[in-house]
Picture 1 (spheres, rainbow, N blue to C red):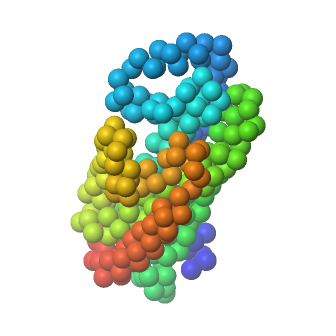
Picture 2: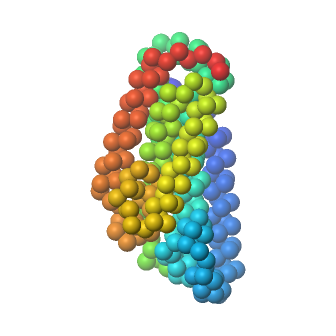
Picture 3: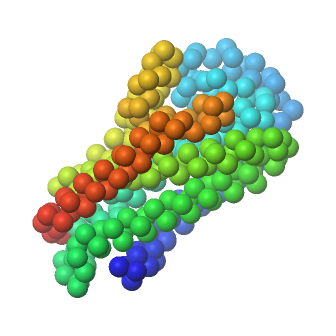
Length: 266
């Protein structure tokens, strides 16, 4: 199992590096933008106040004062979350279903390991990658966003927000893994998973726009640890528990599905 875990880390490192480069580029651009526009943030915030609410929601500005260090940080987290969450969903599909796509499933699952052990080793490697991704987001956000803004008081918020990102990523990964176990092939699994993550965002936007149905946030993992809510109240214990339930159930069910699935090249 350890051999498969290490092999999986090696096979997925190029994909991880590509996504990490995107995070570095995004946060690096944000650092330049904040430095250049620092003196004009007040005017930008006043301009944003005149935008329709739906526009503010779509750009991560609803309930955010971009002319404050915390508000600027919250806005940037919205964009890093987009990359983090779609990467997580895709990782869930890529972990096992890619063996069908590349025609390597028959070779891999004929090795002297139980199929369930192979799948759990792949899950372990994927979660490790998610941890690396979240850690990189945390470091780059600190270096490129918090330091240029010059307000160390938001470091605590940043730490718990980064933890929230990792938990949410793991939830979306497990959902993607479960979907890949149900889907007929890699292509279908990828499409359904990306549409599922997109649907979670649509639900989040609708609930944010309504503003009176916070209890329905349980329907969309991308809202479990929303940066604005985390900044005010910290990590919600209910959503932490719900996240772990979803992760465990989805991974267990995916393991059961893949144990019985006819893995043929697609």
